[in-house]
Image 1: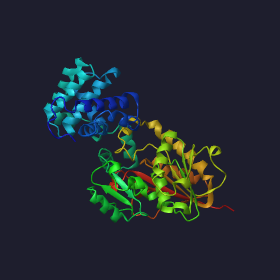
Image 2: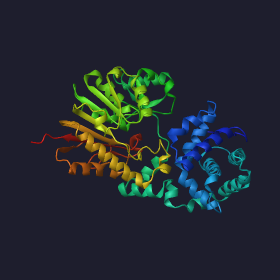
Image 3: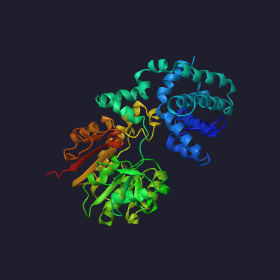
Image 4: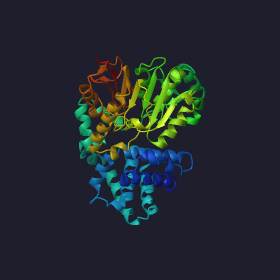
Length: 446
C-alpha cells in the first residue's frame, strides 16, 4: 500500500497500467487472470507493482460502491469510448476512500492520468468529481442503495440473500476483503509444525489452520520462490477449503482414482502426495494451457510420472476413457466461482444471471457422464467453489432423484453448513474460501 507522499509523478505509470487493466475488464470483458501478469510485468519490480495490484483489486472489489458515488457526481454517464476516463475517476475515488495516500496527492496523480490518456478535456471534470466527493462524502454514501453499499451487483446480492438469508451480509463483507495466502504442507516431507518452523527461519510468519491437518495461513503474502522447499513439493499454495478433498474421497490402496477438471492441480497433487504409487491416478483437463500448469505442479512431486494426464473434456468419454471403471472420482465442477470472489473480484463484473443456468446444465452433464464410469461401491466426490444452492445442494438433490443407484453419503465434519445434500463452506468462515462438498456412493442394484 502506498503510504508516503508520492508526489505528482511517482507511481503515475503504475496508476496508468492499473487503469488499462480495468478498461480491458470493464469494456472488453477480459478476465483478470488473462491479463494481469502481462500488464503488471511492464512495471519495474518493487513498490509500484504493489501499488498497481492494490488499485486493480481494490477498484474491482469496490466497483459498485464507486459506481454509485460517481453516478451521483456526474451530470451524464461516460460513453464507451471514454471508459478510460471512467476508470480514472474510479481510481481516484478508491484512493480517497480506501487508501492512506494524502488526498491532494491522490487528486493530483489521478488528474494527471487524463493527460496520459490524451483526454485533456476530462481534466477539469475528474478534478471536480474528486473534490465533490471530498466535500460531500457522508451525504453521497448515505444516498447509496443496498447493492452499492455492499459493492455487489444487484442480481448477485439478491441470489445470495435468497440462498443465505442469515449469512448474506457476512458473505458480502468477506467478498470485499483480501484473502489470505494459504499453504498445504506436504506431510510426507515434514509435520506441519516443523514446516512452520522452517518458514519462521525464513522470516515468514504463519499460523496453523484449525480445521485440517495440513493448512497454513501466512500473515503476509510472499513470492512462491521464497517458500522453503516449494520446488521440491514441500508445500503447495492452496486455500484451506479444497484441502479436504483427498480425505473426503476415502481412497484405499489399489484404488483407481479419477480427478476430473484437474487443473491447476492442487487437489491432484494432494492425492498424489497422500497415496503415491499405491493407487492409479488419472487427471483430466480440457484446456491445453491449464494442462501445462497442471503438469508443472505435478513435476514437483515424487511419482508424478505415474499420473496419467489427458487433455480432454471429462464428459466426452470416447476421447479418453479406456473402459476401466474407477473406484473414486473427484469432480471439481466448473461453476460461477462465487466462493472465491475475494481472490477473483472481477467475477462481480463478468458473471451474469444466465451463467448460473448454463453452468448448472454443464455440471449436470458431467455428473451423469462420470457416474457411468464409477464402480458399484465406489464414491464420487462433487465439489465447487460456489456458494449458490442451484450449483450445489439443489444440483445434488436433483441428481439423487434421477439415479436409483446413487446414495447420499453424509459427511461427518466439524466445519461448514450441512445442507442435507452436502456441506457448504461460506466465504470467510475460519479464513476459508466459499466451497461445497457432496459425496455420493454407487449402489449395486440387483
